[in-house]
Image (cartoon, rainbow, N blue to C red; front, side):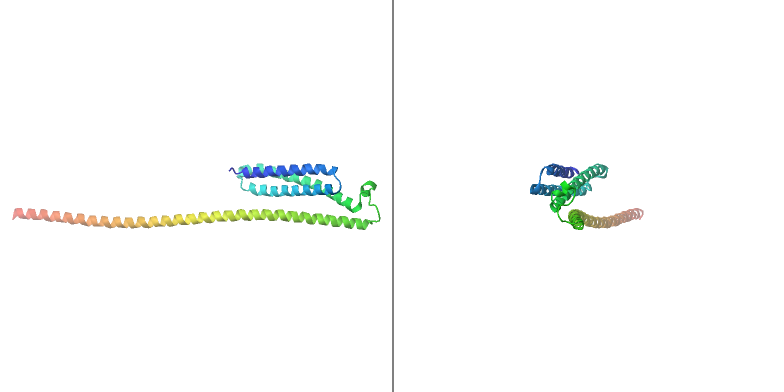
Length: 222
C-alpha cells in the first residue's frame, strides 16, 4: 500500500461528509419547526465527522515523505477552511433559530421582541445561549483533541514496539557474532598449536638427518 493511499481514503470520506453537510445546510431555509431543528442537528453531526476526518488526515500526513507533504498540507488547509465556513453558516442559522424560539416569529417581523420581555432579560438569554454554544464548542474541541492524542499515543506505542524489536534483533545478532568470534579464536589457537608442533617435528627430523650424515662421514674416515 502506498504511503498516500490511506490519506486518499480519508479524503474520499471527507468529501462525502462535507457534500452531505452542504446539501442539508442549503435545504434548511426551506424548513420550519422540528424538521428545521432536526436538519440542523444532522448538519452538525456531518460537520463533526468532517472535523474528525480532518484530524485523521492530519495524523496520516506525518507518515508521508517530506517532499510530498506540502501538497497534502495545502489540501488539508483548504478542507479546514471550507468546513469552518460551513460551521459559521450553521452557527448563524442556529442563533437565528434560538432567537426565534426565545422571542417568537414577531421578533423578525417587527424588528424587536414582542410581549413583555425586558431588554435585560433578552440580553441575559442571549448571553446564556452564547455561553452554552461556547461550552459545546469546547466539548467538541476537547473530543477532537482526545481522539488526536489517542492516535498519537497509539503511533508512539507502535514505534516503541518496533524499536524494541529492532533492539532485540540487534542483541541476537551481536550474540551470534560473539559466538562466531569465540569459535574463530579457538580455531586460530588450535592452528597455532598445530603449527608449533609441526615446527618441532620438522626441527627434530632435520636434527636426525644431520646426525645421520655426521655418523656416515665418521664411519668413512674411521
